[in-house]
Image: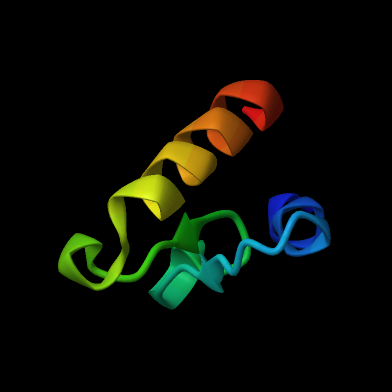
Amino acid sequence: MIQEKAAQEGIILGNGYGTNKVDSFRIANFPAIKKDEVKTLKKFLRKNL
């Protein structure tokens, strides 16, 4: 699961909502995330999706 891979790299991805909860993930609102954290997230997503 992508959330488990992310956690291994220190990234926390939440579960999605409703009927898609099992098959999706969510990310905190971007104003709460620092620019270097966004870069790390982008690098992780490119590598794992």
